[in-house]
Amino acid sequence: MLPILLAIKFIIYTDITKVKYNRIPIIIISSLSSLLVFSLIYRLSFQKATTIALIFYIAVSILLFVDSTYFSQFGTLTSVSILQQITQISSVGPSIKKLLNPKKAALIIDIIIISITYILFSIIWSPRGLRPVIRLPLYGVSTLGSLRPLTIGIILIVILYYYKKEGQLISIKNQEFFIYHITDIRDCLFEDEKVRASEIFNQSDIDQLRNRINFKKGKFTGIGQGKNLIVLQVEALQNFAIDFKYNGQELTPNLNKFIKDKSTIYYDNYYQSVGKANTADAEFASNNSLYPSLRGPTYMEYEKNTFYGLPWLLRDNGYTAWAFHGYEKDYWNRNNAYINQGFQRFISQEDFKFEETIGFGIRDEEFLKQSIDYLKELDNVNENPFYAFMLTLSSHTPFHMPEQYKVLKIKEEHKGSMLGDYINAIHYTDKYIGRFLEDLKAEGLYENSVIVIYGDHYAIPVNSQEDKVIMTELLGKPYDYDEMMNIPLTIHLPGQEVNQTINKLSSQIDFYPTIANIMGYKIDKGLIFGKDITNNTQETYVFPQIYIDPGSVITKDAVFEMSKDGIYNHSQARKRPTGQPLEINQFRELNQKALKDINLSNYILRNNLIKESEELRTKN
Image 1 (cartoon, helix red, strand yellow):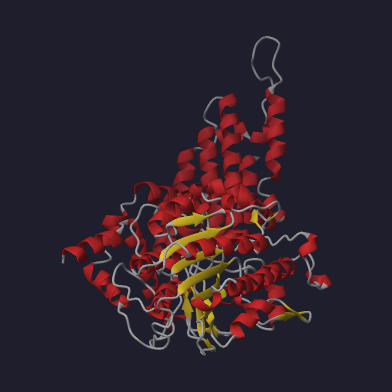
Image 2 (spheres, helix red, strand yellow):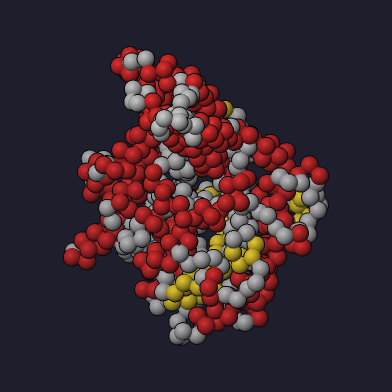
């Protein structure tokens, strides 16, 4: 019975995780693999076999559920490396609930019934001793015990050998439940990344990367020199919300006003560069111009690495650098990681006074209002300028706002939807960003500060068909990953008549060199992957590494999506924004460049090469 139930679950699982190629053989391999395990278990004594079989069944069912839920959020399967994120689950519980549906529930709901049945029959004992008197046909002990594991194993080997000869084994490996997780555990425990990567990269790759830090004078260079820098990373601020009217109502009136100011530059073709830690990875990529880790949260994986990002650059030029966030200081390990990031003080939840929260932290109203006093304190540390890096929180998914803060009228068909909830959440945050800007003016900080506002990552997911349809109808064009990952970047240069929209394709990887050029400081240390958006004349690309798989590419005219099974010929490409299909062979070179950049960044992080390169540079 249990093997049959698992086989059914593998069918559901491959549907949820969108297995497009080799789905039937993958289901067969998963079912045979579980049958192999059961046949080995049922060779034990009855009571022991029944208990172990149930444990195995429950464990697989739970992991199938976790995989499916994680895939719905990130577009990839889980890894043992995300065990580091277990401590974050309680705070994102409401977001996880949003991902639940009947299909996912079917993967675990029967566990309760089967477990109760097992317990009830286990407590029935014969009067002559502690022996179970009933053998449960539910678990199929007698039938499976007669199956020979060797026979099942041979069938599995034959199937895998066939698909290896057909060149499809990588597709199986990347999508089949057991093979994927066994490979993942092996890689996390035993892979020697330094040895492996050293065969792929050499010193010339690092030297070429170092050439990207060359300082080129151009438009806006040095305008911000000697000014404060205030950066506001806004939770789930997606670009479609800018200058957009919903049901006749302006979603972000204050940001719209900020963007239209004579001193503001607006980058509207700007993209997220996150990994599996979303917000924390967005700030990491922005401040360091490195791709976040895909093994786990970058701030946890590489807390003690040497970095030379924006905080360090500004500190080397006399600035004091503080970070602000209205949640617990150890969330995503910020309290420890910020030290090596270059921040000298972290203003967190414990530094604010508040009685009400939205989601899992202080309301943006209180966070931004009370931060003004800390900015004044920061401004008085010395006569030098400061760098304040601030993160909002209230517009965090699942966007559940208390009724008193829901001021926009939502269409009946959007009530209860992700979009309907998001509209009021981002409108609330926009309101208090507007007040924050006015408070900066009142305190004399506005006209002496370069002020940057950008989104950290997407709000409305593409993985949800319901949300995808709603967004396509709302925007009047296909809503896909390129639209989902598009976030706004706005930079206000005090006293300058520079208002314009720059639509050069770019991402958070490009933030650091862009701001460094505006502030007038040469990046003469470290390694970066981005380029100054404003003055770069070369063709640019965005290389996502999550939601759509590494190797995918966004160009100014097209999107190439690397197939999730790892086989290039299974990939797809389409024209922006029409969605018209394109021939994929034209993207082979860019696909390889994307993979090389992401892998090289990972290699640098894994081996702390920024420290090594700085030691070598100093010696020379």
